[in-house]
Image (tube, rainbow, N blue to C red):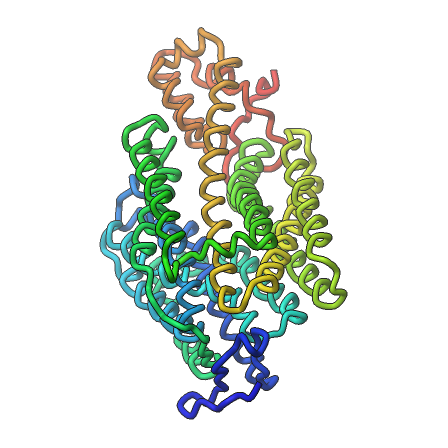
Length: 527
């Protein structure tokens, strides 16, 4: 297909990319520079999803608002989840280049008030703006492979984009911690501006100006509004339920009901719209439908493993918080290796997506099953092997699903189909955390009821016992144990002895607890 030169940007323009098989024949230099810009944009967006966790203790100390501790992170995730399907579809209509520029600009604009925030509410609002920009970037980063490469070569480059996504989880938290300790938490956000400017320039100069052939560029405003209301209501309910409000409370139940009602209305609107924001026809494609189902399970496993495995390392194996975070590094590196290997195998050997998906999802399932069997007798090496196997499977599955979807739909729907995977992964992760959070709380409560004697419970006091059952900090926080002992001592009891009796339900800690005191130091802990 003949390509024209864009006189303003010096980039090649494809007036009909679908006729070119969904790819542009660019020079090697332009491809390298374009992919560099895409991966850097993905890195900025993905890092901001997770790096705030390291800075939040210092942020709360400066701004207050401990009761909204998780909201700065939640606001980013919710805004991203809303932006991803909308941006994916609009990029199919208007081209991806403009949305890379727009997404990165919004991301940087939101970073400025985030870094200059004087209250927690200001930070939450700014993080929501950043989330919109980050969602736009993530929606289009994976889809960009369809613009730049023919189907036979996409697997390799999707693997590299997956590498950036995985590495952001490894690099982000330590980097934010370093910036917070050596400069201030404000620069965790403000650094996005000087880091983003060269990326913005690179994308504006090198990403091809694709002009999709669309007969009519209508905007589905009703679909956008109902999608935003449904996603926001459901994700807020899932993130608040069982944490700030009981699951059967009016607040959580009302949000869940409203969100489900909006979801039904959204589906009705999309089925009747001439230009739907989430074309339902993509789900009639078997590869898309199966990939979305696999991605839902992958997102469930990814987010749940990343959150609850550190709790196991700290609460059962006695690792420090820093150590438990480091123990997740093998899983993230496994994801990177799995994504690259899977993508390269699909590109080089052309083996079927089904076989690669079965191998990768099988490895993920086995890894998660092995993680579920871990207990206080599990060795450090075995735990690392289990999380590494899980990471390999997760990375391979993500890469295979992205490639299968992009190569099975018409080019005009590539953005919508690819963003459906990113949205499914993010939303199912939130759902997984909510479901497993309920399981964890119920299991802990049941174990506590079975092992704590009536005499110890009476000495502690019913109100204090209920508070611990609802917020089991004694699993991982040495200060909570000391407070427990002090509480017993206030009642004229042997605080250490009674606390050890209370903590019999906790398994013995075999590993060095580092600079933090071990949660149970008494020789009677295993009795």
